[in-house]
Length: 630
Ligand code: AGP
Image (cartoon, rainbow, N blue to C red; front, top):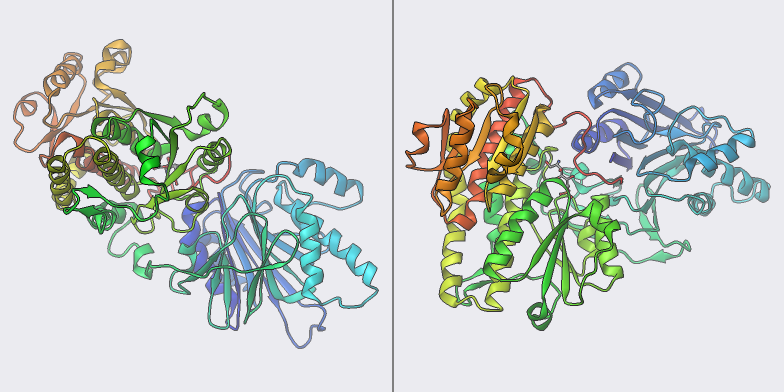
């Protein structure tokens, strides 16, 4: 998954593009580049100068290069890469140009038939300079333009329509996914964008316009965005923009306003986005709950489910599908919905569900959980469910994202932009929304108004209780110093805490690169306990609840094998303190709400261990914030 941003206006493009890339760096960061078009008096009208600068490494490496060799011009495109084809080096960094230097392209996605197309072009004498699939796009557009130019014998050669036609013909040959920004030296006053399967938005400015992979790149530049749909093209000039459909006919488009402000995406006083987002959880949870809990009806209300009450009453099964952290939130949702709504729930990895083709009876709804709204596997699972006629919902954080738009209805998480690759506030907001959904479905069936009122009261206290939980940060930092250099970690919990154990393990491994496994605590004796030794700490999630004693027994089994134990317990719990090596207390909350507090020390533990190990917390190796490729 990569980051794209384009600019056309009256200002120098370079600084605007570099700032935008920095906001997109979480989408991919193994190399980056920029291409600008410079019109100048000494350059004939039909030509202009294309500046191309690209560099492996972080965006700062590109900025350093630009200090030495500026890329001038008020029109430009840029890209930060997460490699899918070809290693991360200067030559594979985007933008990619046609061999005649007239076309430059930046691309997010995967062209599945690029090898065939590349061989065909090479057989026609086209020389390639990279290992990427993207370069094929630039070469195809240049080829189409050459053929169109030849057919025009000089007439209308600067008409944007010619550019659009050449791009449209080239795209028709591609199989795969793309979000593209394209510039041409023949048309130095226009940027073209195109979308199929990878997100792309137009940022509408004042006598300037932008193109970006997602709105966070535009913070501080414009709050007006237009989301491209699949098969659409956009044409941007400095003072205008329009959207074209697959037949190159103009289509109407809605201009959305983003309600994020610049501060939302900046780190503020925090060293990393991840820590900021861990601390934003109380506020994010307040935003998730705001306006959705009704004491009068003792239930939750959602504005965008787009399913009738009867449809919802007829639901006989729910499938939750997601990836990664969102999958762990879905596992919590399974316990919640089955406990409070008594509806059978299945949780499916989206990457498996999309191919597994399980028998699903009619009254099943499919709910996709996703922070980014662009995860390719989750989007594909959603489309497969729609294809089979199931009502679909999306629990999503990014307004207007693909999954949010393609689901029949849904609930926005309102967590604000989540920049750190390791998801934190999106997880707790997903759990909060799932809790409200469980309440909502339950109250459509058998939950009494008293039970509904009780849940609403308990939910309203959660943001402050999470705020209280954050007080364990200093203690967790000391614990992290003790265990930052081990090679393996185990995370163990039961019931609502089994998914939290999985989430804690994922947090640790994805940012500290320590191997970690999450298990149902009782599973230890079925094999994993063989892993326990003095160098393998086990984190036990054991707040007060009906099976506390069972988990305590599992803890004793680990201690009997000299395994270090970190116990996450309810405040005031003393029994564990006599046995565990470290005890972290979290506020006492009803069992079904405990994941919202017990996950916080696990997020902090992963963060501090990664920081102590000198890992890049916000941009961990090999990862990207949203995986828009399969
Ligand atoms: C979470 O910390 C990971 N970065 C990753 O597992 C993520 O949750 C997963 O890729 C799903 O992303 P989504 O929620 O945007 O669909």
